[in-house]
Amino acid sequence: MAFDSYRGRDRDAPREFFKATCSDCGKECEVPFKPTQGRPVYCRDCFRKHQPADRDRSRF
Image (tube, rainbow, N blue to C red; front, side):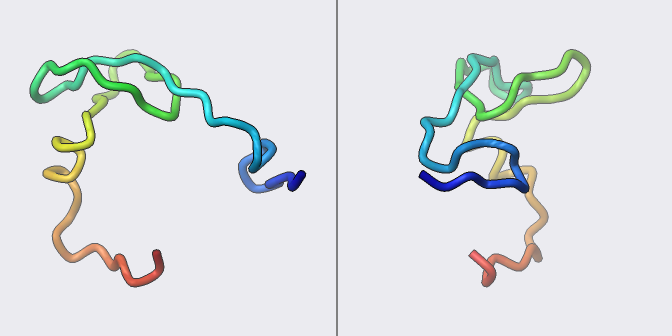
């Protein structure tokens, strides 16, 4: 069992997801963080549309 001190959780533990409604398309989705009122939440498809095109993905 490995502990990820950066994120403060056990890396082997299942990640908790929260139900949310996409701020763009209104579709129900699940996100790996607790949504905060007043901040937009996007489904996977809409999130991709909001990412900068020049973002360096070579690290992943």
